[in-house]
Image (cartoon, rainbow, N blue to C red; front, side):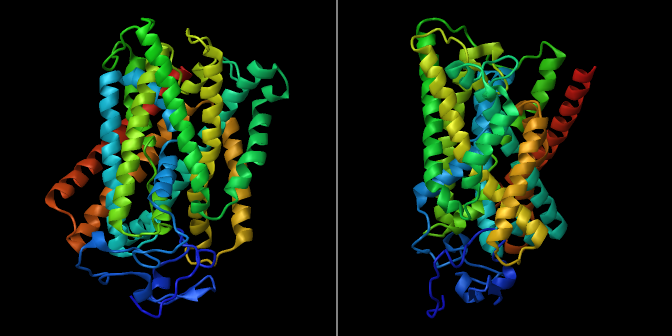
Length: 482
């Protein structure tokens, strides 16, 4: 590394996706603040390679990183927040479709495969010196594939944020089948208007958090959101355990239900829905870029800790939710917590579960929005466009307005998840990472035989599941319309 290189504060050089590109690494300017050479930007060998990639740093001040960067705990919280969102609320419903045994195996397998693809992305981002998900895809597969990946990120993240608003509206103001939290607390009023309530929450609570420029600024809110998710899991498991001990829960189904055509259709779309629960790949590079110690090995550690945390949280949530509500489990299990649970302090526990998770979604919302805004900015204004606070705020306002409109048009989270899961979720989480690994393996000889075979298997399975999921979604809509 050039000994004349001076560390710059993150306030003057923000290492975020879409803001520092390969042309900059070759000597171009950056936002008018500094000029960075290839030797300053990266450690290790040139692009043609060699060397041990696991010991290379991707960008910034080398392995030590900038003093303003985040540590492992903050990065774990940010990555876990990207994963544990609204998808967790649909998992008890997927357990109802798959059964407990098959459901638990599916959660574990999907978690492990997701972690493998995250490590592949980090590994090849180092190899080709990419700073974002889109750049890795561009380097490996070309501009058309990069644009397709960016569109997938936009559709997926916008869909997830719409789901967040749907859940907030359903839980707080109620739905046709369930009573809202505000109705139970203070009676009927203007808050019964679901669209108005969502708009108020969006403007007062979500917009200020979404206006932040750096994902590291959200580390404290991310930690709080993960803590609230853990509270939800602990309370749900405690309620289920008490009811099991009291003999109030019957033996759950262990496998899928093939008794009806509707059950079979649900089975076709449930794996894509579960795929959505682990999609965080587009946030890996922004988190990596802000680490104090920027090495792939450090990011692997972060990814593995996060995966273990999420698998445990998901498994406990799915099982406890299905045990509590059985065949009456809704696509959004939070709405089930509006009635007597058959134990002491039922009302108090119901409020803790619902209000706590709504706060969790409010804190998760800006983390997902961050990647959405960065991707839209890169796609519309170009990857080398100078940073502009005014443009960033304008994009935030426009995106939040569109997301709000979407939340008023989509009926429930199951509809949103089954389509995004079968298309953009599988593409971002498995198809693009597998294609990137296989393509760059031919250049860098970086994959072993086992990983090469695994990448091929993941690619094939993801394509098959996506096709089956889309077909199942189409037939499901057709059967409902008839």
